Image (tube, rainbow, N blue to C red):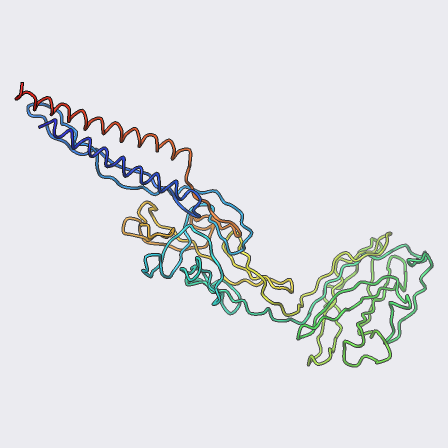
Amino acid sequence: MSIERSLYVGLSGMNVQGQTLNVIGDNIANLNTIGFKSGRSAFEEMLGQSLVGGSGQLGGGVGGFSVDRMFSQGALLGTGKPTDLAISGDGFFAVEGTGPSGAAGQFLTRVGTFSKDREGFLSLGRGGPKLLGYGVDGNGDIGSTVGVLQIDDSPYPPKATNDVKLQVGLNGNWPGPVLGADGKELVPQPPPPDVNLNENNGSHFTSQVTVYDAVGNPIEATVHFTRVAHDNDTYTWRYDVTVPSNEIEGGAADTKFSNIGTGNITFDGKGQIVLDPAQPPPTFAIQPKGAGNPTTISLDFAGSKQYAAGSATLDVSQDGNQSGTFQELRVDQDGKVYGTFDNGKERLLGQAALARVRSVDGVRSAGGGLYLASHDSGAVTFGAPGTGGRGTIQGGALEQSNVDLAGEFAQLILAQRGYQANTRTISTADQMMQEAMNLKRS
């Protein structure tokens, strides 16, 4: 009887080694599958028969075969496609839609091959499940409710310039002459209205800044600086703001530039600009053609210097912009999704959520790199990338398969040897039973 049992023991070994071969083959087949997590064969001994009058038990072979999914980190490969996303660390992308089996629901995945569809959703493949995340509210702030993430790619609205910050370094070689590009002394003249200061060299230094009206029309403004007084340790410069006459209402038809603002700035003996903190920056107004109300712009010279060196623009910025057309997406490490526009602006469009479960070993495969939470995995919790033990997101990259090819080949050899050894058990038991049968004939 024990010889017959040894046949079944050997057969159980052949079965599990054959199943192990299937797991290894699946791993190797998915060597280059994005987001694939390798499987590992797991089996256990089977309870055998107690020995009569003895203290031990005969083994019953091997059984209890299962496949453990190995959720170790795969290598990240840059792709250059902005909507490709990879997770560095723990967590899953959460997607909602129809899976490969045709069943609809909410899935977990490490596959990040997302594309923006015609409705603005980030979907896996064409028409696949859609990425879940946090939308933005009316103030442009990230919300707190998880839902299907939809990208707003509407044009970026224009904004009129309200503030200009201009830092200049002015030549402080007083009382010596100021020389022009041709080496000749510049003799400044007070500019009357509607005069082209650029052409008559009526200033010692000029700095340009592009400002925008309410509908996004660009207007090139030039700020002219002319030194006018030196009294003890106080140095005074006059500034004049000019714009092309043909770009504003009221500009004289026979002039090229209109003077729309003038004033003085002073520096102390150390070359620092003297500003009264109780006084707001000076303003000037632009009345663009066909743009409705005039645009009032403040001009802040804070940070300007006067040194014994050539004049130069140190920094210039303004807060207006033209309208912009959507170009592409950008996703940063904390999952925030930004839209970039051809006017150089960005807009926050949402934030990708990452999901976690108490036990990743308890998730069930749904095919296509998708997983379902189960009773064994525990409930799904959502959060922003980089919080609560969740990993971070790398945009323009994908997580590669975590299959170790060298390790799989080693396991392949072991499975082959195990299968071969179990066949020897069966063939030997068969020979022993044949010898027992031969006793009757001998």
